Length: 94
Image 1: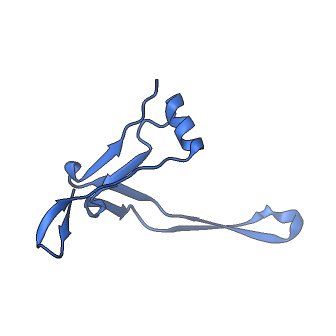
Image 2: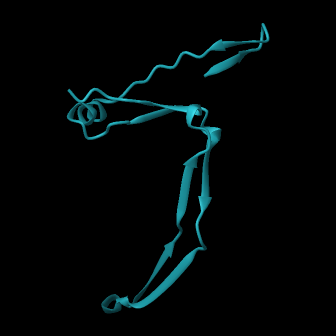
Image 3: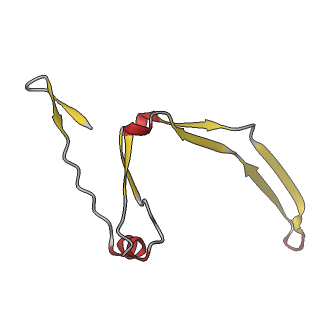
């Protein structure tokens, strides 16, 4: 991904360093996370709400303590609009 160099008005290549903490690195090496880091132009990643917000009330859930419980559900979906805009760090599982 190229960044704009304001002094020259020409694009330059961005240098990105990826650092993983020891716990994440251990999980990558064990093969748990195949793609633990994403980088690039995240503006092509679109998130949308699917359906409405659902609110449920229960007078019985905490009956013994005289409390009322509420549950709120919100469903979301996401998709990458342009596949070349975002790259992934692929760990070495060996």
